[in-house]
Length: 125
Image 1 (cartoon, helix red, strand yellow):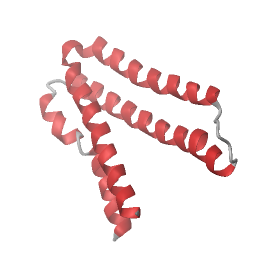
Image 2 (cartoon, rainbow, N blue to C red; image 1 turned 135 degrees about the vertical axis):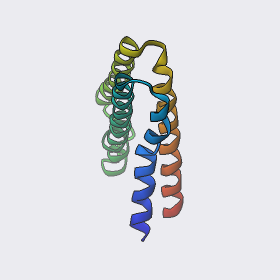
Image 3 (tube, one colour; image 1 turned 180 degrees about the vertical axis):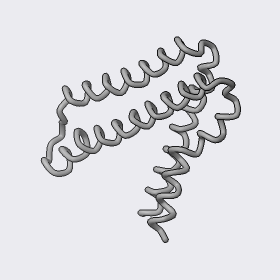
Image 4 (cartoon, rainbow, N blue to C red; image 1 turned 180 degrees about the horizontal axis):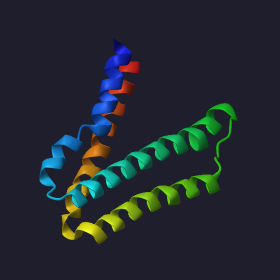
């Protein structure tokens, strides 16, 4: 039951904001931009988790290293920034000022994922 509860929290955190914001979008084009920015945000968050785990945490735990590969970390930051910035610029190009709705979703998604991570970490302790 614990496994099911955690997975439901993860699904709600990643995809729970979609039904909240879709009624505010008028055209199909706005919905497509919204979903593209939403999935760019998810890719951004997964890259953050992957980069932290493989380039910061694992080297410090298993290699007894106090430093990590700064080149790979900088590359990950540039890739993450490029993905989000590219999706937002593309969205502004297509829907103009209505880009605020996907941006609010972006902030809400980060907030929900943070809460889910906090709850999962608290349950492990």
